Image (tube, rainbow, N blue to C red; front, side):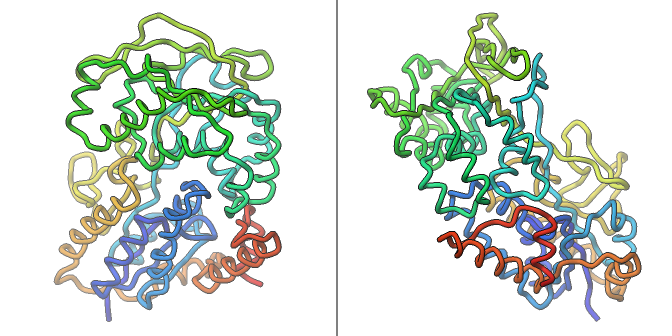
Length: 444
């Protein structure tokens, strides 16, 4: 008899945790709310980033391990409770991520045409929970858009909005997404960062791609890059910052080519108000000043940008799960190096956490491998010398409730259906974007 663990979430953190557990001889059930695995690799990484998305091939190998069983289409909190999982397994690892967006908290933020980057990304990645009607309505009639935020997601959104149709046509975006993006009248995208250019969180590769888009000028005025102590210090201390600033300075000396579309980069700028009648029409932007400690505050100096579409990309936050201790200040599950603890700091037996819901939304995909490995190491320490619980995990309970999970063979059927659909459109794959279509493909 061997130990059996449950991992809640089939994104990178969950599958890296499953891999580490399987390598230690533990049988693992990977429980996923959606009918498909891979989490943000499938529904967060931009579809035109083929090299990053290829990590799915590595993650798929984890699902193919004999010690690992996929139970997709099972929602913890609805189909089964956390307490029931803890009772059914020797250990439970929560890796359900941080999926809720943060708000700008400015007047007019609720106007039509103001959307979260998470919602737009869900739409163009073909997430089954995407609000297609609202997003497509927000894109109609838009000529000028503002993206608030200077991380990789903000860069992805800006690029997708102005990317040439042939670049996107090679991706696995649903066909309706390609059709809408091909017909948008967007000519200008403004990207806002509230601090200096040195504080931007994008990677150099992502940043450079903006300057390589056919038919797109990147506008970054020299005034956006003036020398100041806090930025100069970051430039000297961080190689990534230095490389990013080199790219931005090179762009600041470029002459406009007269391209039909433009991406404008603004720093020391934060949204103060969204204005409009039936939808967003303009954004009031306030100039900021950045202190030596990196904190930004308003100067009272404002100007307006035309904006029929505003996309906020200012971070993610985790959500609580019933029965699990939660830190509302940091928006993470309370934990001590991956061991879930209560408010008094006492360990909750059998319950662990990894990924963004453990540490907050930080790092890259590879960061999650080390993070998950650290959690699993503590889990294995706790299991050392313990008696195995036995049984078949939560599967019998799900069966008694009429819940039929999508297993590995079901996912392989979905994968084959998406490849077949892509072939009809001259592409490698086209994402099935509704839950019904995914479930139907899983059980042909």
